[in-house]
Length: 38
Image 1: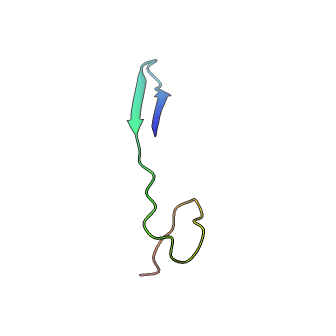
Image 2 (image 1 turned 45 degrees about the horizontal axis):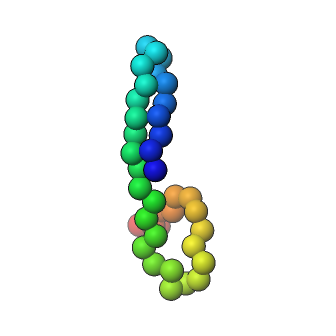
């Protein structure tokens, strides 16, 4: 995924991100960020 965002000074900043699906053994995946309780 690539996002181009306008900065305050008028220039454009381009950021690259990745979507990773580690394990679907528990069923269908759900989006969003998840944190481990520890």
